[in-house]
Amino acid sequence: MDIFYTFKAIFISGLFLGSLYAIIASGLSLIWGTFRMYNFSHGSMIILSAYIALQAISVGGFLFGVITAIIISFFLGIIMEKIIIEPFLDKPEAQLIVLITTLAAMLLIDNSIQIIWGARLKKLPMLLEGRLDFVGVGISFQQLIIISIVPIILILFSIFLKRSRIGLAIRAVEQNLDLSLLVGINVRNTYAITFGISAILAAIAGVLLGSNYLISPSLGAGYLLKAFIVIIIGGLGSLTGTLLAAYMIGIIEAAGQFFLGLYWTPFLLFTILIVVLTFKPTGFFGEKGA
Amino acid sequence: MQTSKYLLRVENIYGGYGNIEVIRDLTIYLNKDESIGLFGPNGHGKTTLFKIISGLLKPSKGKIIFYNEDITGLSPQHIVNNGLIHVPQSNILFPRMTVMEAFKLGAYSKRAWSELDKSLDQVFSIFPWVKNKLNQKCYSLSGGQRQMVSIGVGIMGRAKLLLLDEPTLGLSPIAKIDLLNSIIQLKKMNIPLVVIDQDVDFLTDSTDRLYLVERGSIKLEVNKNEMHKHKDKDILHMYFGK
Image 1: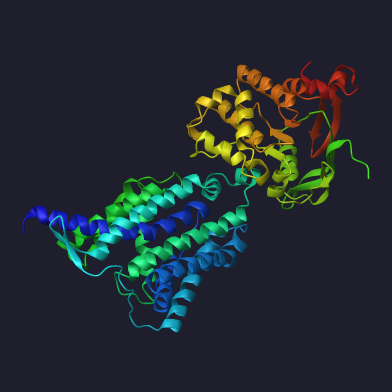
Image 2: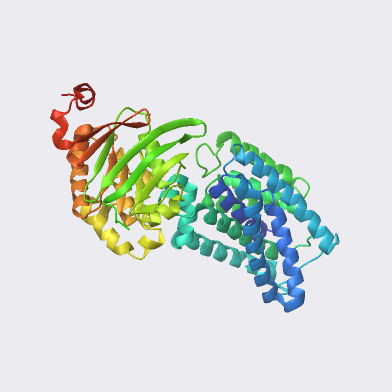
């Protein structure tokens, strides 16, 4: 097996994993940036969206299923924000309280999934069946689609944040809460919509993951952990950092799987996390004091 | 129903932070066609008063009436939509956004958004140098530039009244003169002002009437022309340094 092929295979696998991590972590990063809080239910929301999509697909086909899942997730996100986040924002120790409430939400969601859909493994239908030869490496159409779609989605998301009036408000609230109030931004509504958008990103992640891997009610925590590692290494508060870290970790994980095997790869990732935090506590692109 | 001759009435306001009362029975008036200044020792409630007027804080007692509408206890969003704009002290703006984005945000309210271009022209006429800084990030501005961009952000809100909190803080004497000229232009555009500042000379040059705020209430009201005639010479001595 020539070394060139190995590199290509690892790189493509890494791009695929990186794309998944990028879309998973982006929603978490958005919440941290805006609220300065961790949404522990993010992983569960991803899985929940996958199940909702599965259900909706069986009713109206793939496209209908995906769109329904995204819309329902958006509103679920807003409702969640109103119930488990907003009432506590003014309290002292708000961050701690929200940590607990989102943890509680995580348990609620995971168990609800199990009650509604059962514990057996399920899988979403793929967008396109079959494999192809890509620059001399075997890859499924599914993986190729994901590698191409995710960057487009994230670029659109970035443009939305930069150009739209709502995106401006979200970024404003992130950077100066008092001034945001003083220019007339409805901060409560902005918070709610931000959570809804994070839920949309979670839904997209859920559909992509579910169409590629088997899903079960308990998988949320694992993806949440990966998302955490990504946003911490990339630097809290920086979307660019998150995205770069996602692809970097994807490639490292792909290399790790090839050279060390599946068992040692989590160990490798945590080692990297510790190394990065030792030399750059705020992550590669993080803000000071984050 | 009489139309009041007052633009802003702040009547018998009590307020503060949690259990700490900072403002005690404070009353000020702003007539139409005038600007007023607030001066006095630090920590005696001037910024707190602005926060109460703009809705960031709720008063425990008292009323605030703006253009005949009772705005006491309303949300900051509502008050901004009415055209009452508070330009805070030592404003860091939106550090990672460009000056242009900050101006756009100044016009965020529904009332101001539709007139964004018109407001931008107004800002350019008062601060011509800003045209070259539109793509610069807010954190890279100097203190004085930040101050003036903050006022620009306030103008973008189509202000019917501007509250300026310590606009000369940290400014060099030359920058203060530039600021004074900008304020004169604001008054030409018929935007009334309530200004808090340490620099009482600046206040007398930029406003028509002064209030001394001490321990959370008004100790003295001074008309510019009456300055030297006033009986409480000691207080004036302390602040005007004559």
